[in-house]
Amino acid sequence: VQLQASGGGLVQAGGSLRLSCAASGSIGSISVVGWYRQAPGKQREFVALSSNLGNPLYADSVKGRFTISRDNAKNNASLQMNNLTPEDTAVYYCNVNIAYWGEGTQVTVSS
Image (cartoon, rainbow, N blue to C red; front, side, top):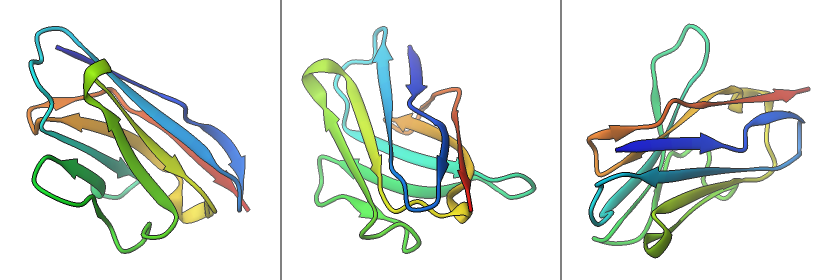
């Protein structure tokens, strides 16, 4: 199973980015997709999660700005990030079905 995250980059504060996560291999059905991030010198933290059990979950710091979505038929997921701030600067990782992690994509927000 491989996860490929993409869509990161450099953006000014207030801007938007859309991250994508494509899963390939014998992953079966996707029941949970999560996005996490790790800023320099900090631990990896939860950002957003979409599961078959209910409504998406978001970290308080991104509520109202980020939107997680997924396409089970295509085995991919996205994270739409709006109104970005320098505090959102981090490497973003996608996670599928708890067990699988992508390599991460860098998001840098300049002030």
